[in-house]
Image (cartoon, rainbow, N blue to C red):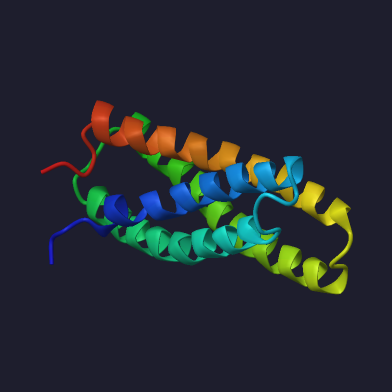
Length: 145
């Protein structure tokens, strides 16, 4: 199969992280409008899909390494990979910590505020990683036939 899975899968964790951030912000602003755990479950979905997007990205990087790109492109690839790994592991760790703290202290609103701060960081990192991925594809032509 020669179909590149990474570009197809990578949009799911990005969308779920943005959705978790936005809906959790709305939940903090107006607590009775939406369910309190919507951000938590969207983060879980983002972590789930991020694992598969990362595995597919590794396969694509091996394939791109056979082409022989310039040092500048390899540096951007490595930075994109690092940011992607931070998003994957950050999502997994934040999801586990958040769900643990939530079930231990269901009434504590400080957990929601702390989770929002970490979601903000993850959204910033995933945005930068997406920017680097876009640069690789649309400016340098990596992964195109």
